[in-house]
Amino acid sequence: MIKKCLFPAAGYGTRFLPATKAMPKEMLPVVNKPLIQYGVEEALDAGLNEISIVTGRGKRALEDHFDISYELENQIKGTDKEKYLVGIRKLLDECSFSYTRQTEMKGLGHAILTGRPLIGDEPFAVVLADDLCVNLEGDGVLTQMVKLYKQFRCSIIAIQEVDPSETSKYGVIAGEMIRDDIYRVHSMVEKPKPEDAPSNLAIIGRYILTPDIFDLIEQTEPGKGGEIQITDALMKQAQNGCVMAYKFKGKRFDCGGAEGYIEATNFCFENFYKTGKAY
Ligand code: UTP
Image (cartoon, rainbow, N blue to C red):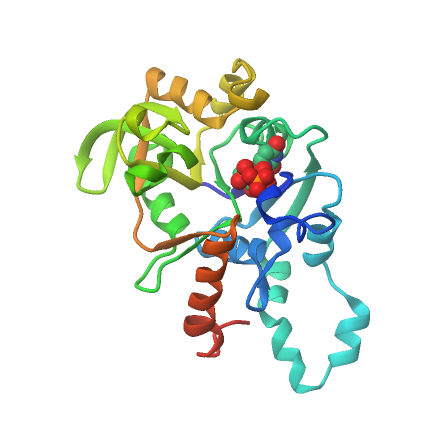
């Protein structure tokens, strides 16, 4: 089954400058935990314990975060502060971490292709850590998607209904509804103007991809802004076989910008930090 989860984390994070000038966007803390840790926890909950991270220049804090800090551990050993590291230690014990670098930031599709040597020829999940997803009612979003993969055996993309005025921030799908929360995707448009959008169903940062996606990305010409978009490769996959879009259960916060980040912070403070579930 699916064991691997890829985290493209090489982007510049320009919407969060100057905070992201010398610090990776994925290390921004939501209350007390960096964004990427929420993503890895969600992956592990879904049974994905082989974590692959695509990094870039200035992103070394990511590797240090998923490693033991001996001085720190020694310092707090035997004190009541040890509890603060329980969650991250669990990740270190139960996951493996591997890294590769994207040397030129040529878009999300290109970042995923850069991860190919770490993934090989098997289906895998992709998490964009700046989309923080939580479901207080039950399974995490990746767990929900892994279950669907077992049923459909094809690429699954997470979607969310957005206000029609917001379509230009997302990849947007058109498809046939086969269950009230599942669509068989026919086409996709990257960041359409509201008047050109085929629907208000926007792709968010959770995917399960079958490995044929790599060859399709290789064949993809750079699109908007000279970037290689994952949407273009997924579009070919949708034409060749099947891509399912899934309206997940739970909440998603766009932590790549200030508004979503503040909402996520308030939400996590109320639901995790104050309730003692933050470590
Ligand atoms: P975004 O466009 O949201 O991230 O890419 P960004 O480029 O870092 O942010 P802004 O728009 O400049 O503020 C979605 C995801 O894809 C990764 C990013 O790190 C982010 O997780 N990405 C994007 C790469 O890894 N490489 C790229 O070349 C582009």
